[in-house]
Length: 400
Image (cartoon, rainbow, N blue to C red; front, side, top):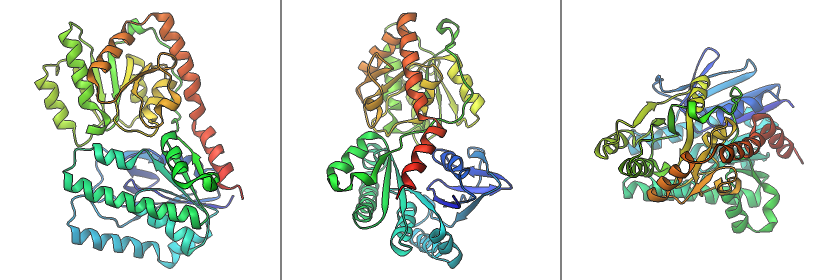
């Protein structure tokens, strides 16, 4: 295969053969896919200010990264429009348009402005096959977010318009859509009907190539609960803190580590203080180093992710692969994989009482029960390795 081209919505910038990105999710999968091609290009919005919170990724020699002008969240409305026009103009430059047209495979993240425009150019102007990747339920994520109501309305309108464009392209152009989350895929099949089923696929999350971790003795672990993810309202971080408070009032003291950053971080710290559990909860900040992530897996008894909305979270899959029992909510693609008390523990979203009960149940589970859950969970998670997902993806996107 000769050439693949990607467009990603996470901001990035290059320094030598290193790529700075605001999030590695999907970018590392693109890098894995790029190794199957002679030439690869990633287009992404340019980071204006590189910070220590950015993820650093090695860029293979044959992968070229092109950072394009793109508006920032703090820009004024007029400047945002100017930057978006500049972005479209940049994509339509002869050298970029030539790359987009010549690529054997073209991929972009869907339900975002840049990814949708990129897919439109590839499928309508160049008249070539394009694949969108849709992560999670964007509309529900916005509804559950802590944005001002007026900002929510405008954000929902934007995402709905992107979805209308993608639906049009599915019906009228050579376009595939890959979903991270079975629930999303089922919703699109219901909306479009059986006629377009052959254009809809489930990709789901993919495991990074983390070091193998064996099942360790629970009694030797020093952390009771581990959370890894963005610190936002829709991730259920408030529910987790309230559940810990309930357990604390019942005489338990679950030591908890929260890994991640996000717009709700300061509020979460204040809530922990207000609930008088700040001595139990440690906020570790952003962690990108794989070995450090593995150390958290090795020292923790349970992984907890009480999200209100999800696709199929990578942090959950990585915890399962690392022999860490998971407590998660039955949202998005999670209940398609997790069976309660079989390969993990399921709770209802936005229910701190039920979450506290399940945490207590899991912490008090017998060694035999935990061993069976860990064994089944690891077997299920290993179906989502980079290599397995990449082979499945390429075999379908190249199939005429």
